[in-house]
Length: 136
Ligand SMILES: [Fe+2]
Ligand SMILES: [Fe+2]
Image (cartoon, rainbow, N blue to C red; front, side):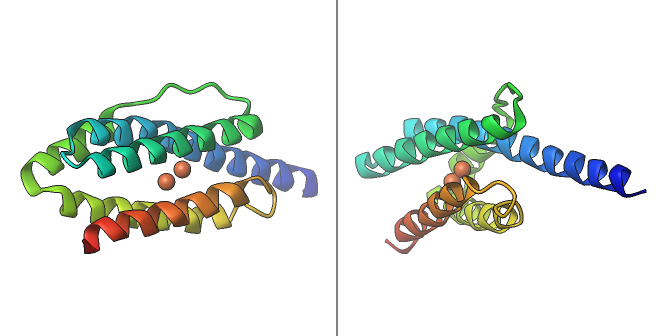
């Protein structure tokens, strides 16, 4: 039945958008925590700027989902622990991968939800900026 499958498809998209929204909220906490612990002032500024972008992404997605979600600090906890044990470059490589992966998953949604284009641009920039610190 045609209508049923299209409803299912919409539900699936909504689940993806909600997951993305949650990911953005968690990323705000993660990058803020990272800004608190790193030594370099320029790095702190960059992580705060990225945190602000992730917050903006969460609001863009909220407009599509209509859901109010609560940020979880679990990812931040894991990443900050890894930072303390394995150092900045180790976690930056993980975060760079995460940013690139985000551009890929968002590109599957952008056709139906055009404002996501703005998010994709930001995530690609985040990956580039993080890569600059890795190569420093
Ligand atoms: Fe984001
Ligand atoms: Fe990002």
